[in-house]
Image (tube, rainbow, N blue to C red):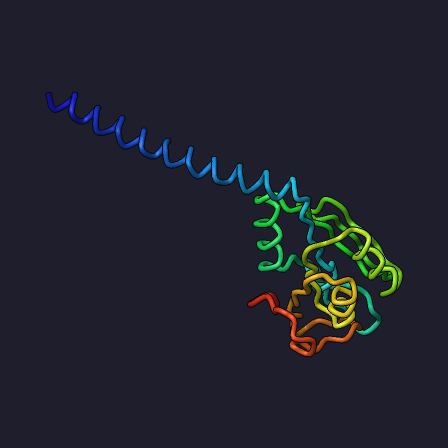
Length: 174
């Protein structure tokens, strides 16, 4: 009798876990489908947005690493079905590596081209680290979210958090 009771308990426990998993999967499928049907898109700035690049005095990249919080945010959005694009401000010595979660990667020559790209693609949110990126997002009527810069950053674009009353992604400088 003890073996039968233990087996019943084991089967009941795993059946409850499976049922919970099915409910969660169904909820995810509804959210994913709704977001895909609505064609929600977000964009991230590459330099000091998704990737931190430290440069020396000559302007050559000496250190390059992925920023944790913005990348986790992008992965979460990808899981729920949001399309993710990465926008790169053109630089001479940039070694571009398309992030694995990005659907598209665009290289822009100037801020005007960035504005046109943001407006044309109809993004919902633009994650930017520079004042210029925040300005272009506001002009294109897109929600700007500021990604904080690492204190070691040598990015030449302006950086004044809260100047435009934008949302700031916490701990994004890491």
